[in-house]
Every structure is written in C-alpha cells, then in structure tokens.
Amino acid sequence: MSTPSLTASLLLGSLLTVFASNLFASDATTLDVMPLGQSSFAAYQADAKAWVEAHRNYVSQTDDARAFELAANLPKEYRPEKPDGRGILLVHGLGDSPWSFADIATSLAKEGILVRTVLLPGCGTKPADMMASTSDDWQRVVKEQADILAKEVDAMWLGGYSTGGNLVLDYAQKNPEKTKGLVLFSPAVEVRPPFAWLAPAVSHVKDWLVTPESRPNGGQNPFQYFVVPIKGFAAFYHTMTRADDVLTAFEKKPWEGASIVMLAAHDGLVETEDLLPRFDKALSNPKTRLVWYGDKKNAEGLSDRVKVFAETVPDALVTSFSHMAMTYRPDNPAYGLKGTVRICWNGQSKDDSKACEKGAPVWFSGERHQPDDRNHARLTFNPWYDEQLALILSVMTP
Image (tube, rainbow, N blue to C red; front, side, top):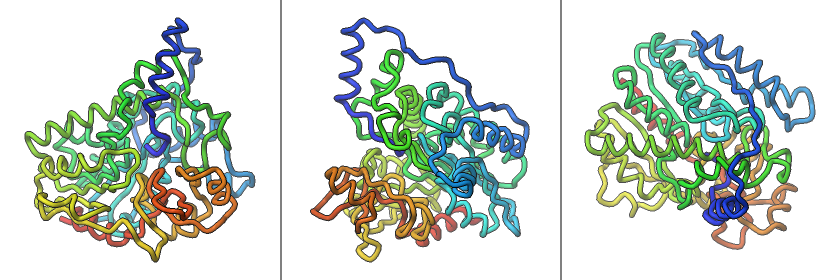
C-alpha cells in the first residue's frame, strides 16, 4: 500500500456528510474486472497483457517509454539459467504493479530460483479500475497462481509487499503443505491511520477521497497509483483484518516455515513498532530473520534473529526508510538514487515539492518525514539492498 493514507478527518467527514445528505447509494458504474481462472501462468500473462493494453492510462509520451511502462505493469516470469527446484510467487501492494519486484526478482533468479509476479485486479491500468475489484479477486489470483507454481517446483516460497504480504499470509495459513516459507516486505497487517475501519462503510456511499482528475497524470506514475477509490481501501482493509487474524493465530501456534520479514521504523503507513515483536513471536523457525531499519532499542528483548540496519545513510542521502524502499536497488533506473522517477509529494512545502520535481538536490526519507530543513523526497530505493538480499538468500537456502 503505497498510496496516501486514509486520514481520520477525511473518512469521518465523508461519512457524516453522506448521512447528513441522505445519500445512501454510490454513483459508481458497473465496471469489468481483469479475467482470471487461467490454467497456466502463460495463459494468465497473455490475458493480463490484453487487459492492460486495453485499459492502461499511459503516463509516458514516446512509444519506447510506453512499451517500457506496459512491460513494468505486467505479470512476469524470471526463469533462472540453472534452476534448482525452488520457486517464489511475488505479490505487490495496493495500487502498485509487478515493477515493485523488478530488482529482487532478477537477483533471486540469478540464484537458481524460478520467480513469478502477479498483477492484482484493478492495478496496472488506472485508479478507476479499482472500483470493480475486491479482496476476493486478489485472493483468487494469488491462490490460482500459487497452486500452479507449487506443481512446477520442488519448494514454493511466497513473497509479498504491503497488501501483497497480507495476501500471502492468508494463503500460507490455508495451504501450509504447499508453502515452504515467506518473504515479507513491509507487510501491512496493522496501519497507522486510526480510522481505516471506516473504509468499507464509506465505500458504499462515496467513491473517492481524492479524485484522479485532481492529481497530475490522473493520480499515477508509470508504476503505481497515488490515488485509490474508497472501494480499493475497503478491499485493502479486508486483507488487513484477515492477515491480522493469521498473525494472531501464528502467535498462539507459531508458523514453522523459514521466513524473513522486513520492516522500517519510519514507515508512514504500517505500525511497524507493534509488528516487529509480533512477528518475532509468530515465526518460530531458527532460520527466520527479521530485518529492522531503525533504532536498536526496538529490538531490545527480542530474539537474536532480528537484524538491525541504520535508517540514516548519509552517503546515499538517506535520512530514514519508507514503506516502499525495501525492494529496489540504489541503481534502479526509475526509482534509484539517480533514477528518472522521484516521488516529491512527501510532506514538505509546496515550494520544496515543486523544486524537487524540477530536479533540485534532495535527500530521501520515509513517508511525510521531513526531519530538518533539507528537502526530502520519498525514499524509493534501499541502500542496504545487497545486505538484505544476502539475508533473504540465507533464509531461502536449504
């Protein structure tokens, strides 16, 4: 979930306004959903490509850039030169795309692992397409493609970023015999906005908190949405409550599969301070690792499986970690330190945001974290990428 948070004032205000006006029906129209139910990953890829080509609101202007943008939003297979029987299905977050895993998927495939990514229905095209998708659709695509992959490899892992982490937790609990282990990047099991629970109710009477038309490029960049309809937030909320139930169950009877969970102290969306000790309790395998980007004090009293990395990395112009930073290399062509795409709307003044968009020098930080007078864009890469990758591989190696 890398979109703006559900603020208490907006949600509560929306609900009260609707009730005061006696508006008891949404004005949303009936929309189509990306087709599912394919019997192979290749067939799923083909249908997803046709769907995205027909529905995509392109941000890029040139043919070459549009071709790159299209590819970034499609499910992809990364086939290793020397497969070793391991496979992993990677599931992105709310309003995101398979591009979230462009770097990590490439790195894992180089180690002999068959990697596949999925596209959650409603994502990869335009924000309005999320009006029709539900958490059931998201759970369905994960189940279908995980079941297919499990038949083709000796050991299947599941990986998820944010909402994707919630979805793979759900699958793992329901299918322990198929799931070797978990790789979770910023799993959104608990969120900071206190009124997220209002989203399902508000979604029946109001479509948007912020409309795509009010934001540049229709509220998206080549790889993700920055506005999401309230129905999308409601669908996310359903995945969150389900994942919280799973984690609670694992706290009572720990998950035995080897896993790795990555969390950051200044994640602007997820209650990471609460989740760190919960995951430490819920995941019992000695090979399991929990990566914490933050202060060592948060790991006090926890197991030695918690590995702490400093959030502040001056050489990389990083002040703190964000929700989305985990999976991207510092040299990622789009989101890297010198990449072509910046996320400048990060809690600073309008003048600083505009300066950032025009290419002014910036530092990088977590969502809406502006700790000093320096201009901070959102951190979109991981300065500890290689060290994190080594830990992931240590967990995934038999």
